[in-house]
Structure formats: C-alpha cells, structure tokens
Length: 381
Image (cartoon, rainbow, N blue to C red; front, side, top):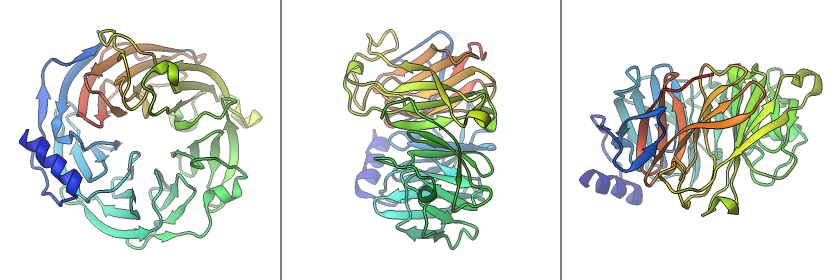
C-alpha cells in the first residue's frame, strides 16, 4: 500500500522520485483473473503498477515509458526481469509506442509540446541530452537507426546530432496527397530502413529512402469505411504475404455499442496492384468473465497494440492487448482467417500492449496492474 501511495503521489504532483533499486515480481496463481489452458500466468512486475503505457524490446533490454517515467529492464532472463533504472520526468502525456535504437530514446511529451531525447547507452543512468519545443507527436518512429524521426502528425525531426535535434519545416504528409481527420497516421512502423507502414485509413506503405522529406507511396489499403486504424504491423520486415492491423474504440461500455476489429490483409501482390486487400476481421464480445470476456467495459470494447510472434510466416500467432479484455492470443492462417486461441483476463484489466520477449513469453503492459508475465504453451502455426 505504501508503494502504491508513493506512486500516486509522484503521478499527481509530478515530484521527482528516486530510482527504484529492485524488481518486485509477484509469482503464483492468479487469484483474481481467468486464463485459458494454453496460457500460463507467471507473475506480475508490480513495480510498474500505474507506470507502464508502452514498451519496445531492443536486444536484451525492454524500454518502458509512461506518462511520468522511462524504465529499463534487462530481460535476458525473461521470467525474472531485472530493473536497471527508472527515470522520472514529471507529468507528461503520452508515449505509448517507444522510439529507441537502444542508444537514444525519444519521449514525446505532448503536454506540454516538448520532444525529449535521452542517452540510454548506460542502462543504469539514462540522461536527457536535448529537448525540442513544438516537436512532440502522439507517437514517433525512428528511421535509419534513429537518425531521423517521423511523427504521427506529420512532423520530421533531424536526429543526426541527437544533442541538437532539428524540426524540419516540411512534413512527411505534405507530399503524399493524403488527408486524415484526426492524425495523418496514429502510428508508423519502420519495416526496414526507410520503408514504413502507417496506421491510418487508408494505410500507406511509404518509401523514404531517396528523400526523407518527400516519401513516396508504394501501396495502400482501406477497409472501405471511415474506421480508425490504431496500429499496423507486417511480419518478416514487410515481406510476409499477410499484413495485420487493429482499430480502437474508446468509451464503449458494451461491445455492441462499438468494437474495434483486428484485421488481416492480403499483401502478397502489392508490388503489382499497389494495394492491400482486407481478408478477415475479429471483434471482441462481452461475456461472464469466467469465459474470459468481461460483462462490461471501462476504457472501451477495443483492440489496441498487438505483436505477431517471431515465428509468424504466412500465418501464425499474434498477442493482442485489448483494454478490459486483457490479453488475447489470435491465430491467423495462411488465407488470413482469424480465430481466437487463448486469453488471459485479470480483474481490473486495462491492457495497453503485448510484447513477445521470446516466442513463448509475453509481457502484457497494463495501465493499472503493471506488467503481467505470461507463457503461451499452444501451437505457433
């Protein structure tokens, strides 16, 4: 209780708290949750309670950010993560998709509008080395090993000298002839150097290799309506025959009032057609809780961040964070057909993102709980 009170104090008053010195891993069965037979609960990293929003795995280190912290874990022993450092930045919002190459880390503080650059080479002592006013986006994506940055609202930042970042006067969106009502793209994902997939409607495959200030559209795909595309990923560095995306529907207390979909797309012939074709979609539903589905929703009946397994190749398994629905395990076959094959639903779940640490171990980043560590034991194909 004292730790929770202290954490809340830091959040509400933006005090600068000292770094944590150990990782608290609560092990054992889940007394307040429900899981399928092929999903084993390992433990909870309760140090991250009320902290975690997003994360990125680079090598053996997991970089976790929240509205107030940057935290680094050594996950070389995935069932026993080691806390390397926690840096308090004060109150800010929001950094749900972490942009880092393991050397520098970008924190987009949109309240106020400030882009922060951290040197994270020393995992025990990250240091802020620069900040850039009026350059923060809802999400950011590193390009070319974090020497450039694309923001979700179109901003371009030159990071070739990370101690002196520069905001370009042009936006990547200016030359795509593409318009959107909320964000030009909620998120961007660099598939390989200079090739990016946008989480937008339509989704865009962009090529920034020739001119980073004027990317070209190589292909695009739309579900044929105005739904919001929250996240998009393409396995095998954009070479898999299937591409995946998910939407977001906040504030829907019941699924029949709105439920975002997880979607599969045919990407096998994009070089000829310059399009992605929707194949299948999966939506959440309410239940009895004991069946793995909540009877009602708080943040919304919604998909959120997801990640395909490293073995995903013309189909496979995906881990999906789904707010009140916790963590869902999804199978996509070679024809794009989607089916749910497992779940982990804790009480008071507000799961933001899922990350495969190995092809069996998943870290579920939860707004309220911390990091739930799960082991998936089912088939991978």
